[in-house]
Image (cartoon, rainbow, N blue to C red):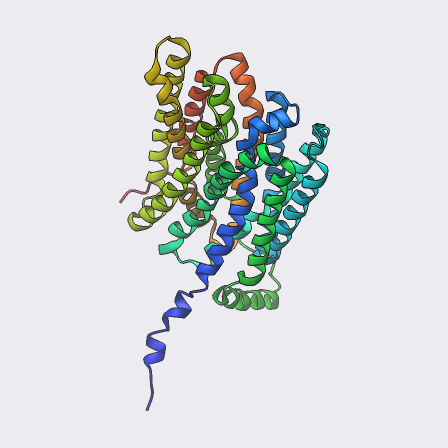
Length: 429
């Protein structure tokens, strides 16, 4: 007498293992730790400028080299994640980032009012970017491997929510810490966060059984046939992946303009105090966090990731144009109190919109590349993203010096609009 029931209904835990939520927690922790540095340190821009004796140009260089480090090594980290797996890459990257930040807390901080050479600060931030470039591709690949299509948008959005969450925590804590205890404490706290994320990775991150089971027979068959290296073309040969990665990088430039120079703009343009500066930056990061989770869940339910991305572009462009108009009225027309009050509100709204699309865009990109090659595709995208983080702080002060802050924000809106031709078009139903 046969018992066919087990073959007809496989157990649910094998299809949707509960451990996937621990893997997602690892991805969130890793991104929170690195984003607290990458997005939180710019919130200390006013204090960094004073403590290290910098002007706006050298401040932009110091903040930009962190992005340069990620841009140079994000793609190699992604290729290594696809080749060696997520766990060793994430462990190595987080451990080295923690070590670099610990070195900075000892050797690259002002002592008794005497600032170190700019080269030491820039070298340390470059190293943080180089090592921290491992986080995005490895953690994103792990999420794609553990979650199925119906949950990937939400899972990737939660993972990407860690970026504004880490930045929000950084914006909330780091300026206060820099003003009270100095940058040794700032870099030391960031080192502890990265070390904690590495310990969580050590305990929870592993490759799913289904991925190992799917890869092993194919690899053995390829070895027997002698064609192991004759694999299909990867993401780097797919024009759709390149266009999507470039779109993600270009979309991040207005976001980085807000994150790196919003505090300087509000301080220099309207004389805002630390309370206003902190409130705006925390609102941007927390608002982006909520928007990313909501957009991931919504697009999972409606299957409209591409249409959502286009809607974000249009709304972001309109908000930056409105910010430019309000700043022009507040700075050029006496008695425009309403415009002056609208500036920080519009700046926060534009910053949220410029950050809300991340999880959806990364999910779409990883889907185009395939889960097995997601590390390479995400690495390519973050190379473009952090090139933007390097170039935006360099270009923005020069644009403001040549024109004005309102025209700089208008250019940010135009940058968002320029993304439209690169985005994949929604499929016709």
